Amino acid sequence: MNMIFLVDGDNNIGTGLQGIDLLTADDTVLVFYGKGQSLSSVQKLCAGTKAQVQYLESVRGGKNSIDFQIITELGVLVGRGEADFAYVISQDKGYEAAMGALRARYADTFREVALRPSIQSCLQASFLLRSASREELAQALIREFGPAQGVLAYTHLEELFAPAPAPVPAPAEDPKKSSGRRKRGGKGAKAAKEPQPEPMAEEQPAKKQGRLHLGGKPAEESQPEQMEEQPVKKTGRTHRGGRRRKKAAEKAAE
Image 1 (spheres, rainbow, N blue to C red):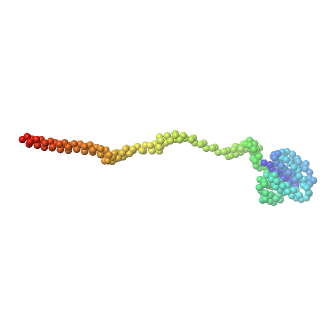
Image 2 (image 1 turned 60 degrees about the vertical axis):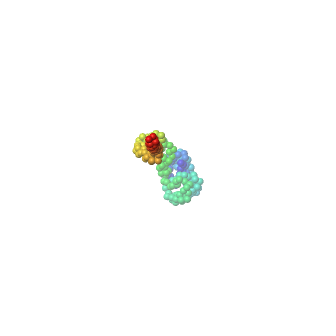
Image 3 (image 1 turned 90 degrees about the horizontal axis):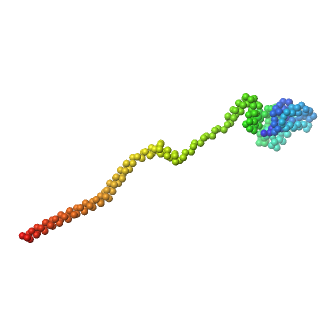
C-alpha cells in the first residue's frame, strides 16, 4: 500500500505536514512551494520521515499558480495508474471541484483520491491496512491505543475473525454391523418376530392334501377294494355251482 501526498505549501503548511513522521518508505510526499520561497523551515518539518520527499517549486509566480500545478500533477498520476491512494493536503476547499471530476471519470484507476487538511488525517486506518501479520497488527494497535486498550482490541478482533470450528464428521458405520443391529433390535426385530404365525401356512398344505385325496391317493385305495369284492363274487358263484353238482350227483345215485 503506497500513498501519495500533494502538499500545498502556500496554505498552512505546518498543519499540513503533521503526521509525516508516521509514513513509511513506500509513501511519497510532494511539497509544492511558491517561486523564490525559502525551504529551510519546510525541510526541518520533513526531517524525521521515512517517506520519499520531493520539493517542487512553482513554475510561475502569482495567485493560484500552485493550485493549478497540484491539480495537473494529480491528473498525471491518476492517468498513469500510479496513485492508488492520493491526497491533496490543503485548507483550500477549491480543490473539491477537481476531486469530483476525477472521481466521476477515472474512478477505476485509483482506490481513493481526497482532499484532507493534514497527512495525519489520512492515516486513521493505515496502521491496520499496513499490518502484514498478526504480530504487526498487535503492535500497531498497541501504538495507537496504548498497551492495555491495544491488547484488548487485538483480542477482540481475533475472536471475531477466528474461523468457526469445523463440524466433526460422524464415524462411518460398517454396513454389516449396522444390518446386524437392525435385525437384533428395533423395527428389524419386530419384522423378524411378526412372521411367526406361519402355522396358517402349514394348514394350507392340508387343504391341498384334501384335494389330492379326492383325485390321487384315494384312487389307489379304491382299486384294492374292487379287487377284494371280485373274489367274493367268484367264490359265491363257485359255491352255488358246487351245490348244484352235488345235488345232480345225488339224484343220479338214486
